[in-house]
Picture 1 (cartoon, rainbow, N blue to C red):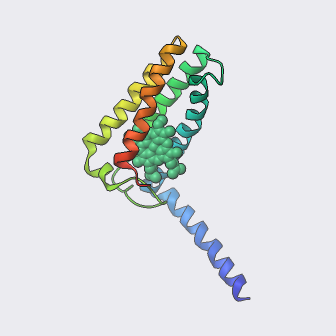
Picture 2: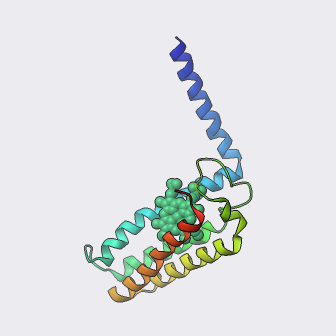
Picture 3: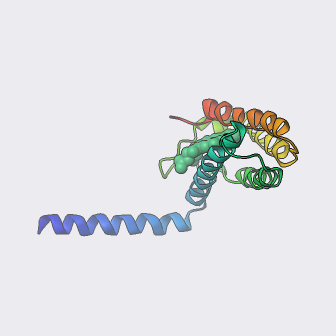
Length: 147
Ligand code: HEC
C-alpha cells in the first residue's frame, strides 16, 4: 500500500512538472533548444555519411538540409532568454548568459556554416562546408555547454 501511494505521488509530481513547463517561457525555451540540438545531432550523422562517401552525394538533398539547419539555427537565437538559466537538466553554462557576444559569435558561425552547405554544388564544396560547420558544434559546446 505504501508503495502504491508512493507511485501515485510520483505520477502526480510528474504531471504537475509538465503542466508547469507549458506555462513557463524559460522552460519552454530550454525544451525547444534541446529539441533543435537533437535534430542537429541526427542530421550530422546523415551528412557525415555523405562527406565520407558512405552515402551518395546529392546536391538537392544537402542544400535542403543546409537550409533547414540554417532555419533552426535562426530559431536558436531566441531560445536562450533570461529565465532559461535553470531547469529540465539544462546543460547551458552560465557563460551563455554572461558572455552574450561570444555566444552570438558561435551562433553566427553555425548559421554561416549552414548557409555554405545550402549552396554546395559539388561533393568538394559540400565537404569543405560541412567540416567548418561541424567544427562550430564542438567549439560552442566547449565554451558554453557542461558535460
Ligand atoms: C551556439 C552554441 C552551440 C552550437 C553552435 C551548437 N550547440 Fe549543441 N548545445 C549547446 C548548448 C548550450 C546545449 C545545452 C542546451 C540545454 O540543455 O539547454 C547544447 C546541447 C546539445 C545536445 C544535447 C541535446 C539534449 O537533448 O540535451 C546535442 C545532441 C547537441 N547540442 C548537438 C549539437 C550539434 C550536432 C551541433 C552542430 C551542428 C551543435 N550542437 C551546435 C550549444 C551549441
